[in-house]
Length: 276
Image (cartoon, rainbow, N blue to C red; front, side, top):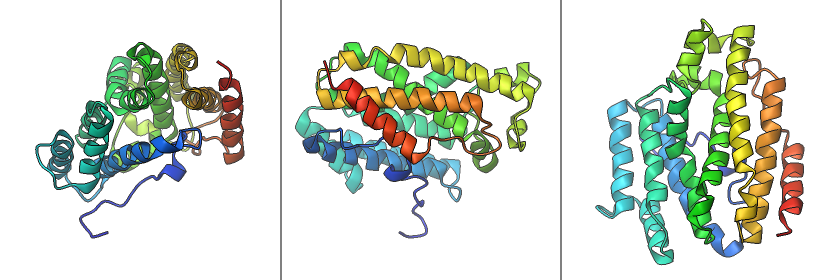
């Protein structure tokens, strides 16, 4: 890796939620891995501290040009484009992610809950839609999938809210909710949550609870057993993590599920999702 290439800020092994887990059919994992590589590379560009906004946007535009077929000078993006073409998949599931990464590169703050959901429409929903199309699931399942992916994204933002502001001045908590409680974004740098900050966090978690309720309909809309098991497991993980974030302080430490508990949720979800 040369000095112009951003170092990865997260790998599949350190993601909060399963990425291409053993529940995905082996013959599909190559496509999932290729999608993940492009998404991770773009995310690393958006987060690279040594790149200015203009350079980040230029590199993200280059990835998009490779995905759309306008150029062919990025091996990962070209490989994904070819895999999608061979399987008749919609390349926009990858290209839409770049819209969110461009918003990250420009540090566009989420001013409202609606802004946050609109961001998740590009940063999270395309992942679920890609997996559904890969498994032949009809578009009627998209609303529930979008809800689950958005819930996962927002939970991740809550986990990393302090680091995001400290390192990148990036704000994913609705700024109007902070203002209503007399809080500037800098309040995220405190060593613990104030009562006002806890009100804001709980309000975000209330929104996540609504998303998880809508997402609960997803597993029964998925004919493929393996993907149904995966969706059930991820739904369990989302609910459990939301409960932990309501109980513990994300400004005092990073609130996450212990590895053993995450594995147990994955197994339990697989068992619950096995029957049709």
